Length: 318
Image 1 (cartoon, helix red, strand yellow):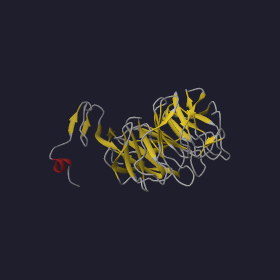
Image 2 (cartoon, rainbow, N blue to C red; image 1 turned 45 degrees about the vertical axis):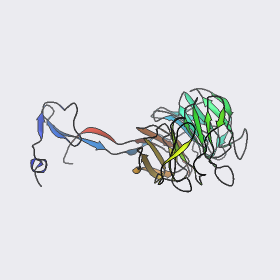
Image 3 (cartoon, rainbow, N blue to C red; image 1 turned 90 degrees about the horizontal axis):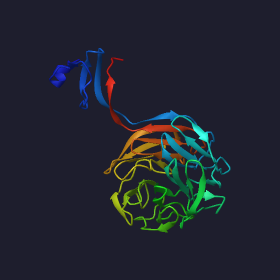
Image 4 (cartoon, one colour; image 1 turned 90 degrees about the vertical axis):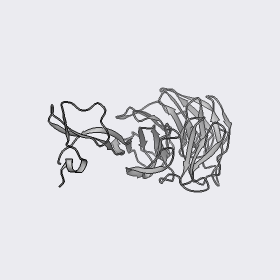
C-alpha cells in the first residue's frame, strides 16, 4: 500500500491538540492523546427511536425531533390520541377534541402547532375542514378550511400557515389556502392539479411543494401569492409520504416507503433509507433532523434522521 506522503505529497502532521478549524479530508496525529484523527463527512442516517404508545397510520405530526407531537390517525377505528416526543420517549397527553385521520395536515411547534383537514368525526366523516391549534397542553378549534380534502399538506406556522393540495373525492385539488391564525383564505392555485399527495415545507411567503409523479411532477415555490416551477423531476421518493416541513426552499427532506430525498435548492438526491418501510406516518423536522412515527402498514415504529455533517473522528485500522 502506498504511503500517505506518496499519495498526498506531505506527511501526516503531528500536533499537541486537534486543529480548531480543520479542512475536510485533513488527517493529523494528536501527540497528547496518541490518536490519529481526521475530519470527514458523516453520511445521513436513520436511527431507531422509542415506539409510539398507540399503533396507528394516517396521522399528523409537527414540531422538532426532540419536541414533536403525533396526533390522530387510524388504528382502526379513527382516533383522537395525542402524544408528545421529547427526543427519547412518547408520552400520551391531552386528546384532540375530535377523531381525525387520513393524513390531515400538520405544522408548527410543540407549543404552537396546527392541524386540520383529513377525515374527522366533527364534519365528515369522509372529509373534514376543521382545524385545531395546540399550545403544548390544550387543543382549541381554529377555524375551517375552505377546501375539504384528505392528505392536505400544511407548511408555515400556527399564525401564518399554508394548506396545499389534497384528495377531494374523485381526484385531487390544486387549491392553496393561507391561514392568519384564525381563518383560512384562498390564494394562488398550484401550477397544475396533482394526481398524488404532496410534500411541503417553508413559510407562508416562501413555501415549497413537490410531487414525484403526475401533472404537477417537480418542485414548486410559493411567494405568498403565486407558485413558480423550479424543476420538473421531483423527488425520487413519491407517494403518500412525509416531509421535514420546517425546512425551507433551499433545504428540506421528504421520506416514505424506505426512501429519503434531499432538496438543496437546485436538485434532489437520495440520502438515506428508512429501516421500516411505511407511508402515512407523523412527520416532523427541519434542515438538520427529522422524525417519522407510525404509518401504514399499521405500526408504532419511530425513526430519527440525522442529516450529513462534518465531524472529527478517530482513525483506526478496524
